[in-house]
Length: 186
Image (tube, rainbow, N blue to C red; front, side, top):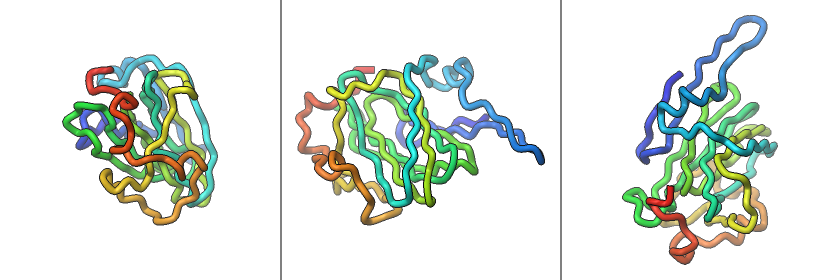
């Protein structure tokens, strides 16, 4: 298993060991002690699964309070996955990391608490799975504009299909600072 650091500390790319033969494959998708060695909390409280078609973009989503860390992967299909640091006072505030996740490569990304998260589907469909360190709290959830020019995410599409809440999401600089998690909030 390979844990790869990114330009933003705490955001990790994970390449699990996959053992395959003519019958199929086997892999571990989570082993608490191994992931904890690399700074990923050993307690997840909720698992989520979404199915989306090509051109759908979900995000950028966050919740505060109750910021969630997320271990994300794709079971079938392919997405471009993004984490944006929105922690007040962080040296990497407003910066993003993006990677392609796919069922073929079976890779994962860890998005720490205090980050906005989003993905767009680049295959016909994508079955997207994520483990969360906190329970979903609809009262704490908010969105940031997927195309915020100050963040400058280089999405692989120009006109994605968005949910209403994502179409109406503000840019990061228009959110009150108290709405954002702090760098030291953990």
